[in-house]
Image 1 (tube, rainbow, N blue to C red):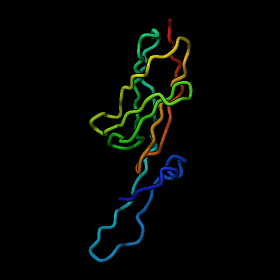
Image 2 (image 1 turned 60 degrees about the vertical axis):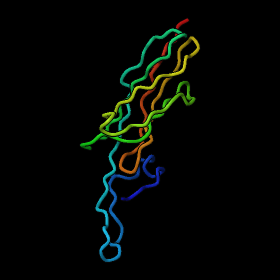
Image 3 (image 1 turned 30 degrees about the vertical axis):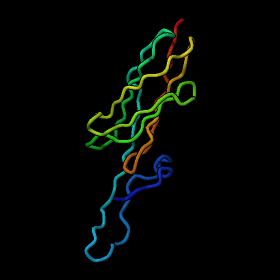
Image 4 (image 1 turned 90 degrees about the horizontal axis):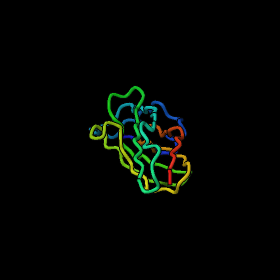
Length: 135
């Protein structure tokens, strides 16, 4: 298995990689590894919520052109600060996880989701969604 530095993947610089030179006699040399572009979306956000409630955020990650579901970590930020994470577990989650936020102060908050990528998927981030917390 070929592992790539996460920095290379997150910079979007890899699309297809080919295994290096053949190994010793009798060893298995991996074939090409395709790196798929990922797309991260917030597909549901409880909105508005009261200050006594914990909003639920549903995040979906897809791999463009892949015939399987992604694995890796989803991270949420609220107003630019870390607010939770969940692991994607391939076909067990089918690319979707629900993350509950801590209770937030009244007002409008900005929520964003990011997928960290892995050896065969680039990292990606969702657009920003507004969450209104009422008194």
